[in-house]
Amino acid sequence: MPLSAVTVSLVAEAKGGPFVFWDDLPAACAQAKRLGFDAIELFAPGPDAVSRETLGKLLSTHQLRLAAVGTGAGWVKHKLSLTSPDADVRKRAIDFIRSMVDFGGVHQAPAIIGSMQGRWGEGVSKEQAIDWLREGLNELGEHARGYGVPLIYEPLNRYETNLVNTVDAGVELMESLATNNVRLLADLFHMNIEEGDLAAALTRGGRWIGHLHFVDSNRRPAGCGHIDYAPIAKSLKDIHYAGYLSAEALPWPDSSAAAEQTISAYRRVVDMVESS
View 1 (cartoon, rainbow, N blue to C red):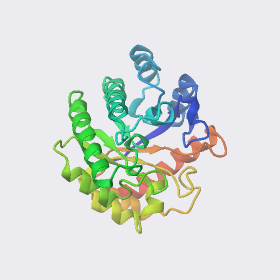
View 2: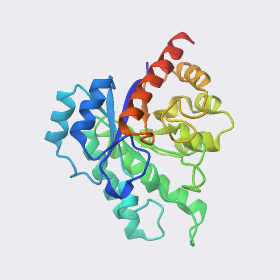
View 3: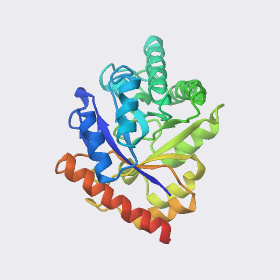
């Protein structure tokens, strides 16, 4: 059965972004526990934002898991990407992501590569950018293996990258890697833009789907847009998905209401999974 998670951002530069809770990690953990979430997904400015001991104690106290850690601060804070035309920037991007793999790995949580994948252009061909992306995923996927977790790669919509926009393109990339320790993040918001049929795309993603961002078409919490979750639930059952449905959603109309709406929608989807 899929598990539930809710996002927490500690990155000041990402204010206004699609994260349910902001800034106060202890309060977010307490509320996540009270509402019945299984885990939090943490978007931190770097690997030293929260000590291993502090985060471990918070998770233990509130009986939560760490579902995943985001690496997007490497882009929003430092403008690092795996496909930059500057070799030094690419190296620093690898180093930053590696440090975030370490940060999450000690808590058995994978790191997510989304915005840090970058894009092609400005003198860099798509083929070259994909080659650099592939090199980075191979190296970082093997590094994540040391913690017994995969690396998570996220296809983004066309307005955020021109590299990989669909689940099918993501699967093609996964199958071209030397490592077998990278999985796809299926984000329902991005998929709503790029996929003709969300459920069919999830089915085609199959075993490569390692994480899911549970959100609606307008990036508000699930149930506040026009996505039909019944066929999605059936696809999740068909592919035997047992990962997280993690709310990377806007705190609409506020964080508490967004979290409550999400956990309610999550329970409805799990009921659909079990009855489909």
